[in-house]
Each structure stands twice: as C-alpha cells, then as structure tokens.
Length: 142
Image (cartoon, rainbow, N blue to C red):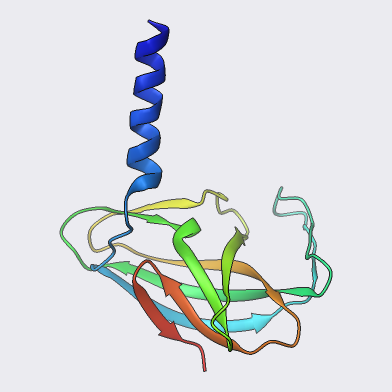
C-alpha cells in the first residue's frame, strides 16, 4: 500500500510540474506595469502578510487581463511567468495580491472567460524591464 501511494504521488507530481506550459488559447493584455517599492504591506481587506523584497530588489506590479479564447478550460500556472531585464536575466513570479482574490498560483480559466489579475515580481533596483515571458510567449515591456 505504501508503494502504491508513493507511485501515485510521483505520478501526480510529474503531471503537475513536468509538463511544458502550452497556452496558445490564452489572450494576454498588459494593462499596467509599475515599480511599487521594496516593501509591500498588507491591508485590512487582505489576509496576506506584508512582503519585503531582498536587499537591492524592488517589486514590479503587472496588471493583466487574461482571456481564454479556446474551447477547453485552461490551467494558468503563474509560476511559469518570468520577467527579464535588459541583460536577459530571468526573474520568477513572486506573488499575486488583490482584495478578495485567492492567492492561488494556478488559475482555472473556463472557455470564453476573462479575468484581471495583478501579479508581482521581485526585480533588481535600477535595472531596465525587458520582457514578460508566459510559457513560450514573450511580451515586450519596452
């Protein structure tokens, strides 16, 4: 029984994390990009704890409109979102923040559905933004 549970867990793990993200039916509109400083506090509407960027880093806020233009539901994994600087160094998605929104890093988006999300990246102070990368698609931020 223990072997079966281990195999089941490894099978689920490889399905969830081992696949290349394929979001060809995801329409992405970047609404706003803003440097919001190295300290990001919680408020009375959100239960998320305050966040502090590492030394020499800042938080970059990216407001997005996402729409599933396909016929099947999509799973959008925000951990697959990256941001690059002017030297093409990659920076991982840090967190999502919003009043009344769940802070899940995976969004299930039904066919035809559109949502707005605000996501944050920890990014070096003084560096220039280059691209937002979602799976295999690159969006210029210049």
